[in-house]
Amino acid sequence: MCYPVAMEEEIEKLEMKVSYLESQCDELNSVVIDQEKSIAILEKRIEIMERRIADLIEVTGEARPNRRPPHY
Image 1 (tube, rainbow, N blue to C red):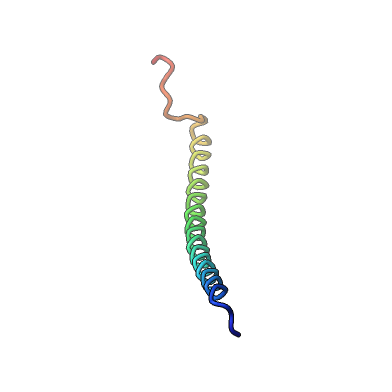
Image 2 (cartoon, one colour):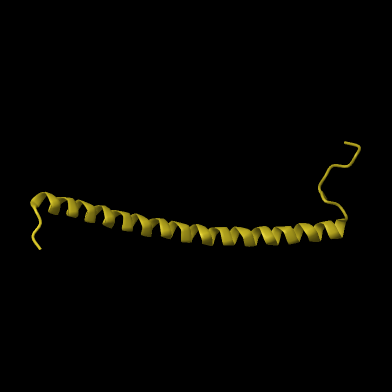
């Protein structure tokens, strides 16, 4: 199919834009995947810390085992 030169240039510009957007989409997807992994790790750490705090409270009977005695 033969298009006028101006139309071919416009099609080429659109193809370049689509190519750029596809590349950006892939890059953003990679970032989201990495962030998802980081969030999962952080959630696991929070879960572990919450269990440790609950164990401390159970053992000491206090929510703040390192607080200063009342005479300070």
